[in-house]
Length: 71
Image (cartoon, rainbow, N blue to C red; front, side, top):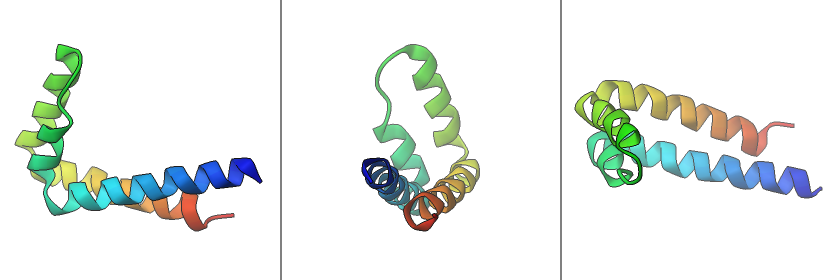
């Protein structure tokens, strides 16, 4: 029961994050920049390519839906 609740919670977080990235991909990638320089470089790469960020956001939404409502 607890595992199912955790899975659904993570699924909802993925849904919200995916929708946010889908609506404003550049701003979403730039708002996450913190930590090691390698992570900043990866997020800069995504911020410069909004279409790629949108594709990952769609995947994130699909994964979130599966985790939230899947069995």
